[in-house]
Length: 87
Image (cartoon, rainbow, N blue to C red; front, side, top):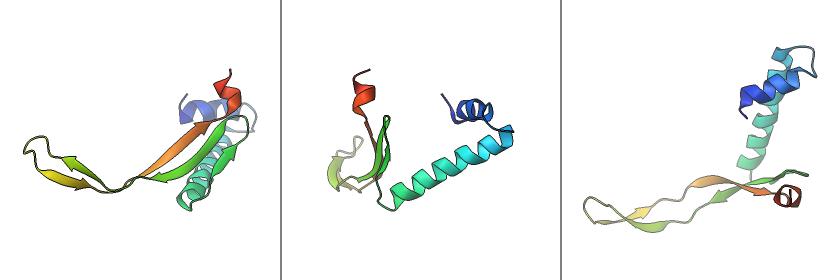
């Protein structure tokens, strides 16, 4: 399911597709802002999202064999709820 599919489904419950798009976009914007600010986003019955920052680690350039340091990265971690896991 894509974002547009989600907007289509929600537009069946709202007066217009434009309003459904505004709601979906605002929902994702608020979730992203919360995650960026270090908050955990929990959707009961679905799962939770939080920010995971990887540590600096050693890597190797495959062309030259030279050792390099891989910088930390920010990732969004999703943990599914037990309801989904047991479905």
